[in-house]
Image 1 (cartoon, rainbow, N blue to C red):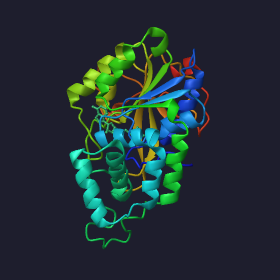
Image 2: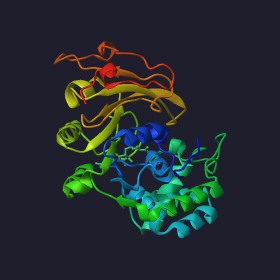
Image 3: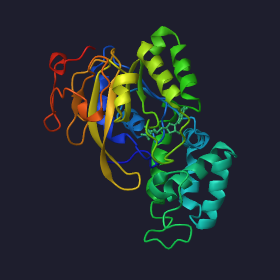
Length: 327
Ligand SMILES: C[S@@+](CC[C@H](N)C(=O)[O-])C[C@H]1O[C@@H](n2cnc3c(N)ncnc32)[C@H](O)[C@@H]1O
């Protein structure tokens, strides 16, 4: 897979872009604007834009450094690409960039570059982690192991060419969703939302996470009521089906992650009832399966049932009847 995003992202979703492209194509009318309220590395969004599957992408992230980075890519492309090619990648620089990111100060280009620097020099791209090789640089890999300057500068320049079709905001998710909801009907109807919130089960300090359980419930209330079409992904937690999205189509799929080390993990994909869903092609690296809520029963993970079918290999075309969905 060709990487489009200059950011490494724990839990990054670039891999589901083929599935999203197909899903968007299948909607009637086909959405022309793709929006991510929790954009992070925005790998899927960039693939959809550069692949010409949508006309415009809207990237939102509440992390000031991440938002500054995307604004810098769009508005100061050449300046940013030059910094990437020429700035020293040393431990001294790391301390300076970490100080700037932690205090969220500086212009978009300064804060954006500092955020990028930490993303490329820290373990697994985790902004609050230590540098690759450690603070004493005695590890097998050194701080610049992931700082492939020319390739990264080229990715930034490539994205910059699409700048007029990318909008960046730095809003809390609820403000961002309200912004879209308040737009005239014909405009909001052109949107497709991909919602990838911080995990429910917090494991490490992977990225900014401002969401409490009540916020997750508030997000679910908003998404279940909205007329917008959306897809949401979560960690596999029974509360997604029992408490947050009962009655919404939900599929469990496998995706490889790179946080800490490369491994394949399972996630849930939940769909709005308005989303027309024909195929799971492109969604999973191994097998995907539908899960279904059992009335008001509280489901334990091992009881999530029934598995309606396992998807054979990568190309299962399903009718809505087969999938047993109410879409
Ligand atoms: C799971 S990551 C998104 C990863 C992204 N889908 C990708 O492929 O790289 C969640 C993102 O949500 C952002 N975030 C956390 N709280 C937020 C909030 N209240 N509103 C908007 N963004 C938030 C974090 O900064 C982080 O970048």
